[in-house]
Length: 482
Image (cartoon, rainbow, N blue to C red; front, side, top):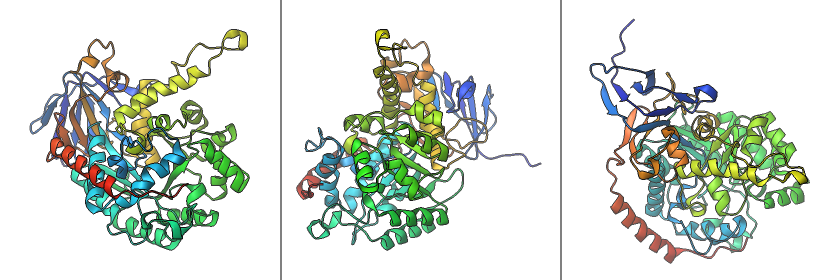
């Protein structure tokens, strides 16, 4: 058998390694990891070999690179908009993302995508699934191509969730062009075009395409949703959308279809192991059971759900029922810290707070004091790495073990927030704030090192963002009331 002479990368002397796996396998003593040909070759005590490129991970923690399963990158220039800052979901949609849709041109769309991807990369994220719904008839630029180009330039894995809608709750004649719906034929034709051009079904694919009508209850008719589901399965691509983010989903499903949101999705063939939904905050027991029985996944977005006052998804109940769990940052317009470290920190705290909120005194039948057992750091890392890869169908991504894709985030522990930790492994999730990156590696390639990204001038990017925000404000339109 021929000797494997592919170039190797050796990560040496890590202080701690979390693998993204469950149970006793969640940690590995390491302290070294050898990468070869874009894969993890071995983990253990590994002496350097001739030709090794060595990364010194002394005083560093190694995680799998995060997998973000729900984003709206076009919102990266819409952070902290005063018009929507204190609104719940439905009025916020009209106040912020809808109002600015038509203000984006090709240059500002490219810039907003770049900013969002760099923000994620600097948090240690290696895979991004973007639910882009900025499409309309006569659109003057190809946003899908721009998203793939920007992710490729940074060396990130990218999953395009092609959003869109064929109907709206306003009369089309009253809508600005950028808010008008597409036809089903145009939507499906573009999904087929994108699949043929970009989609790779490999378990470690750098590019994927997903069919993702924006919201099942509002964006398409029942027959259209069934057609989408059947077309996606014929094409061999997955399905994604928003669901049960607020009580209004419950109200709408009951009023429009006489059932629950998950029940409606079952009727239109939108449940299964090839489907995942963002949010799933408001669910009853039967809905949780249906999601688990069909292995339909969740992209949990705790910061956006908190910012919009939507609630907190019950991840332990969902996971116990069999629902695949992942983390997503959602759009920056409803999450001003749209990075995976902030999201993981919020997920860890809010799952505990959710359970603790249910505690009652003994004289009222209470049986526990608080919720500190609701989620461990290892749980959160698993949800945000291997869990996300599983939801996306990237079965060779998301965990640190031999044979898996070489996607790793190496975090330095040289900030005072990490000083005094008895267990350094928990620092990136538990300590809050963004730890500095010693390196981010995606598919065996170093895409960031010493907290810097090759070719990226952050000061210049900030200046471009400020000018772009000024122009967006000038060109924003008032969206019709929703």
